[in-house]
Length: 163
Image (tube, rainbow, N blue to C red; front, side):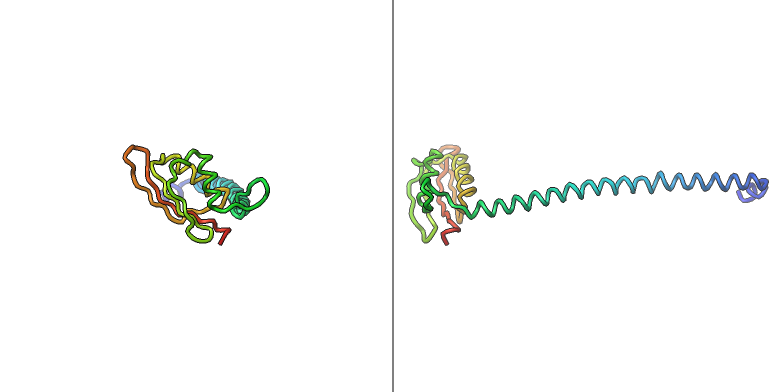
């Protein structure tokens, strides 16, 4: 290969060197530089999108904190006890007949025994109860009922704002 190159005239050698440099530059650009630039642009888009998501999450977290500190209050603005909140929300959810026992378990706590309650309805009620009213589930024990879909449950609910 070297012999072939040396046998070329000076102008041909210059042409081969320039053509090789152009080809090598094109290969470096096409195989390395261009893909890297594409990845950088894509990563910059992802970073911008993630920054927007983080900002939204921070705003949502602040809103969630604000909502958790609010208790359910009746129309006259007085704060309701956890017993009243549980009773009212259970009746609204159609679960009043399944509650067999409700008893205070200390300041801001209540123990509930439910029998033959539809599992899905109970979970929906609990989800609504723990959301805007800031009531937390301290403990829950669920036993399968005789009829599919129905369960017996023992719950302890806590109002963290009453502590």
